[in-house]
Length: 289
Image (cartoon, rainbow, N blue to C red; front, side, top):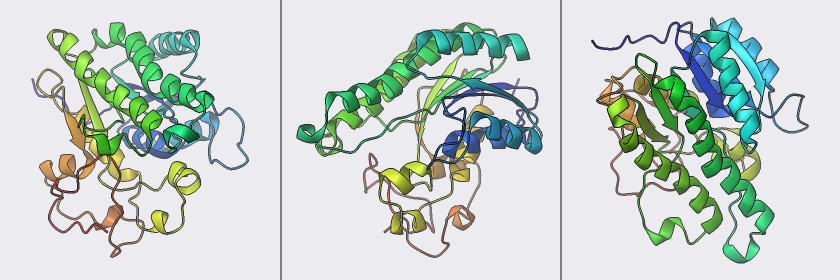
């Protein structure tokens, strides 16, 4: 039976959902009436970064969903396992796991201290592994279970590693989890996919870690990732797994032809995200800088 195009009544466990892409995915699901566990470590207002687990919960409820704010640092295995168990207890299970939490520091090898290296690998690769591991027993009981990693296609080219080796290792580690988990749990019907943006996305990471300014103006809104994730979650999990997907390609396959509304500044050519080969064709009408 084909899954419903709505996520009504589904339960999503989303790491890093207090802001940015994670929150956008949560709000898109909330409009369907989904249950959202907000697993993030911002409990009180940050001096620079917007949003907390509590403000996110309020937005989710206002959008039509049910929210469960959970203070979680994905580096802490016990916090992750307790949060997943609390989610299942509250909503009766877990249908979708979104590994969105990520740490970024774009430095070359000689300028990467081991504290930064450890942070990125603990949050990105290890956090993805332990969160997926904690959710899988519940996902195996769900009707159309999905795990989604916000990580790049697995293209083993030196150009993706040389400029920022530590960060690339951490992000590609998430993608390796996709490769392994998709095959390991294929027989259980648990879909495991990766989603990556073609362009820069207007988030706090772009604003504060990647220079902001012109990059923000030539970015897309996080809603494009949210709409692409929604399209993935409504696919049949037994057939739609082990893929490394790009946001506008997912939406183009769903019949979307006008991507201008996703641009922060419609009409301006968009900055590409890294980890995507420039030769990878964009949908018609998409202009890249």
